[in-house]
Structures are given as structure tokens and as C-alpha cells.
Image (cartoon, rainbow, N blue to C red; front, side):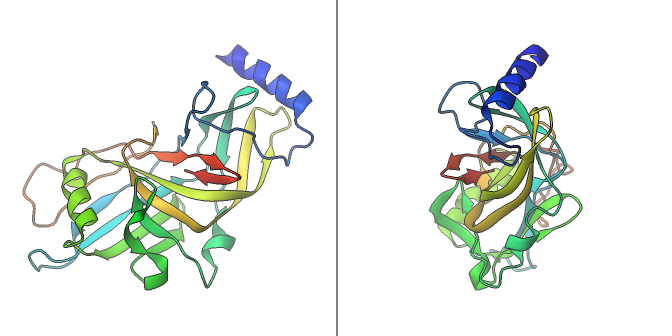
Length: 231
């Protein structure tokens, strides 16, 4: 694998005009057309009752991306390491008109919270892109669908969609660092698979008896459409 990475880096150095150029056809695996996945670390996801009311709102938190941890990606030339830099979303998240929904599996109509109506807050901290939806409507069909799957660990990964605005290749073209992304009119998503070997999380429902919260893997998915990226 190291030899493959080195060959790809050599070809990339010959084919990429400058280090600030974005990766082309970025994806998660060798086959052409495969969806991109981001391998990041340290995320935690939780679901709990927002108050003591039966059938009341649910509070969801998690990380849609974890910063400063490398993950494998592929482009035209072969595999490389990609890293999201700490603070990469600062400019985008500061927008007064920021519009980002929390969705299921990147399906735009399956929205369960949104920044524009105050039901979703996105912030950056030392871990990464933090997602806080404090009052999910338990009567919403999508919330009712996903809640038991989160509690049981059947669904345990997250993702987000964004545009790469600024990045740079390392001098040897083996690593690409995302320095700034734009998440406005993208999304943060609860997904089935994100292929993330480093992240962890838990589910916690205040009134639900059961074992201690389980450690789970959280994945971050990415797919490029123009420069749009699912992560």
C-alpha cells in the first residue's frame, strides 16, 4: 500500500498544476464512481429526552466532522491522506443567514432540524463540527423513525455536506489539508455508513433503562458534486 501511495503521489506531483488545486474525482475507494467517505476521530453522538414529559421532545448532539485527523481518500492518481484543519468552518458558520438542516442520509426532504428556525445550532470546538438539536419533535415521522435506531445502535454515524473553499497539498502530494469549507446550504446528516474507524459516540435516553451507553463508530461521508462535498 505504501508503494501505491508513493506512486500516486509522484503522478499527482506531475499532474497537479499547483498545491492549492483541489483534489479531482475525490472518493473513498479505488473503484471509479464510488462515494467518498471521510475517516475522522473523536466524535460523540447522543440522544436523550429533552424534558420529563412523556412523548416530549428529544435532544440530539453529535459531531458531523472531527478535525486534525487524517483519513484515506482517492483521486485520479490514487490514494492520499486528507485532513480537515481545525477552524476550517469558522467563516461559514459565522454567516448571519446560515442555512443548514439536520437530515437523514443526506435526503433534503427528511429534515428534523434547521439553523434558520432555531432548532439546530452548529459550532466548532477542539474536537470538530458540533451539532446540537435540543428539541426534536418526537411526533415527526422522521424523528420517530430514527430515534429507536439511535438508541439501539443500529444507526451510529454522522456526515456533512459542504464545499471546499481553500486547501493545499503537502510538498510531496501525499496529503491534502482542507483549510476552509462552506457549509451554507449544505447539511449535517445522520447516516447508515460513514466508514470512520476512529470516531466514537454513545446513545443515551434519560428514561430508558438498559446497559451503559455503548461506544460506537461515527462516520463522516463525502461526495463531490461540482465542489460540493458530503462528509
